[in-house]
Length: 287
Image 1 (cartoon, rainbow, N blue to C red):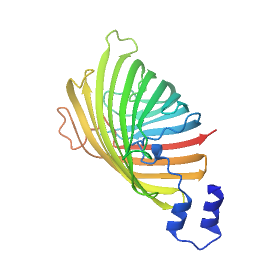
Image 2 (cartoon, one colour):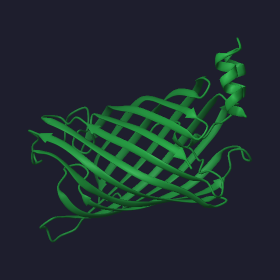
Image 3 (cartoon, rainbow, N blue to C red):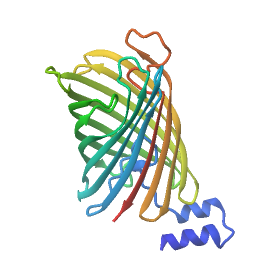
Image 4 (cartoon, rainbow, N blue to C red):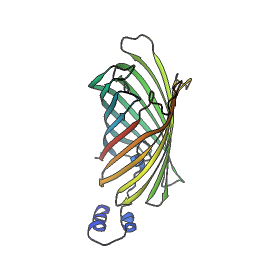
């Protein structure tokens, strides 16, 4: 019914943007903010498939791009609990970078299992709050494309709030990640960890089209518990979210590093631990 009301509002009647917004009260915050995520996980029994492409572009010198394409299924098995198994492949194009082998190839990246528990429902509380954990197993190094064995876990706290009813929504994320990896042919294991914080804001432009922006902070460290500083960065960029149908969505984001510093590196940006640009395009559909 909402779909037909929105179609009429957009194409058959001279109504205001406010009328269209009221007709399209279908806000699902999870992927409205780019890399920042909202607290929504769907209702019990909901199922969704997602296809995402995440690209990292640009180092201090040479030629660098790394694209990870992942397919995942999302299954809300309890009222406030969802699991999401996923599988991904990588594409690297690397040339002329110190410390990295030249590479232009596809490779199998690995598998993951994301779990989310919704602590507070946005509709029933002052804000939405969801906790997430995602263990992952990788067989190719995401940065270099070299063969590896890596076991990592990402833990996240996701908050969101509808600031203007059915029009403006904001979200804040906090993350902690730890990993244990070993390159092919190497006996020793490498331990690393990272923390991050991000904030996103988006507003309804017309119908089911939202546009906004986000800011992200990331800090990379050696050791499992942020033992030694490796580098940090701040990135900002625009976001876009659109629902072409009632049961599908498209999300896009471009984020550019504007500040950073690596350990014992004097440059204004940290292009050793992070990239100059990050992009992501995501499509999802419920079934």
